Image (cartoon, rainbow, N blue to C red; front, side, top):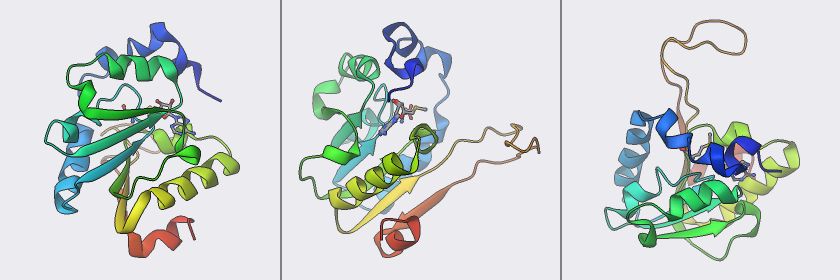
Amino acid sequence: MTDESFGDPRLAALYDPLDPDRGDLDAYLRMTEEFGARRVLDIGCGTGVFALLPAGRGIEVTGVEPARASLDVARAKPGAARVRWIDGDATALPELAVDLVTMTANVAQAIAGPDAWHGTLRGARAALRPGGGWCSRPVIRPGGRGRDGTARSRTAGRTYPASARSRTGTG
Ligand SMILES: C[S@@+](CC[C@H](N)C(=O)[O-])C[C@H]1O[C@@H](n2cnc3c(N)ncnc32)[C@H](O)[C@@H]1O
């Protein structure tokens, strides 16, 4: 099910203006360079704020997003024609063979329930070429607080090369 904050056209239009500092995306761009990625799949691409960055550097990017209103915002942006946008989720992707799968910002937290999560991991694995990588990095704002109320002073991040995929649950 699509969260209404991403699926409502009025709210989707506010997503980028309400979060203008997307310095969190720098790490993903660096990761595309580190992996030498020529093809990237961005799962939960939302308004396309990340997908458009590597696409602007000549990388072949596919963005998949289940909230139509967010995808409409993405499709209307300059350079959007460089990205292949897919309306849906990672459970029904065409054959892609990408070098890197990204899930920027809090996509992992938006995928609710074990079935949806397992389906996403299976779809991501199927989309990766052998030896490809995965990059998902929850955003924790400096000075923000975790669920247990304790202060967090830095951004947490994890990347998983293909050799570690079994540890991510994709088996
Ligand atoms: C916090 S937003 C992040 C959007 C974008 N990645 C960014 O960096 O701005 C979370 C996104 O995950 C999407 N989402 C929710 N469930 C999903 C699923 N099962 N598969 C893929 N994306 C999903 C939401 O629609 C929303 O666009």
